[in-house]
Image (cartoon, rainbow, N blue to C red; front, side):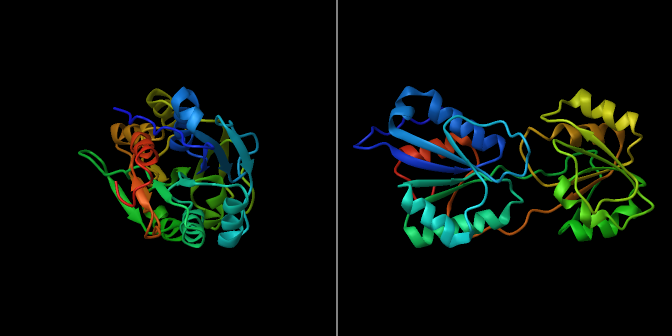
Amino acid sequence: MSAEPAAAAGPARHVLILGGTTEARRLAEALAGDPAYASSYRVTNSLAGRVGSPVLPPGETRIGGFGGVEGLAGWITAHGVTHVVDATHPFAERMSFHAAGAAALTGVPVLALRRPGWSPGPGDEWTFADDLTAAAAVLPSLGGRAFLTTGRTGLRAFAHLTGTWFLVRSVDPPEGPVPPRLETVLARGPFGLEQERELMARHRIDVLVTKDSGGDATAPKLTAAREAGIPVLVVRRPAVPEGPAVAESVEAALRWLADGAPRTL
């Protein structure tokens, strides 16, 4: 059950959502869609700008970087931000550290909205790697036709693999360097289970490569791989900063705002 929004006292509180994820959009929609929240909170969504034509969430939007910790801290101060929600992708570790550092400089509370990671279940054949470089090293031993779902900006880690055929799906075309044997599908998710089954079967995929992004939106590819007996190479999540309160759901993030941004949930 969603938390009741706190009553507005004076000017609306200003929430900066560091976004680009499903959770960031859902949080912005919740704050904008409930009249009680909308009257209490001004929302600014920050997007990195890596996608050419992003689907903009409700509220104000800014696109692009801040200029490091000090740049973000300056923006927070200049725009009267009272709460920061780090709802970036689990692999956007630099921005998470910047958010924690800016919070320490400004005294503005920050919440890390982090979706739970994935865990293998019965029938899964998973191999783990600590980063993309390690994943590229082990990939040839797992299969020769790879569905690479680690993001178009990470293709350079696999560019030297001449013996592996790659299928990549992204909103925008990948930029070099890229593997020599590469086919790209331009599409915007989320994708359902039947779509993932058909795609893997049509391209004769024999190994799936993914980051541990977590959440439900991109999980159908894991189910499709399990059903087809396809091994999965999973890149573990990077380290995260200590200090921010942590929420694993939009509902918990709303409670954090309503409860006055406690240090723990």
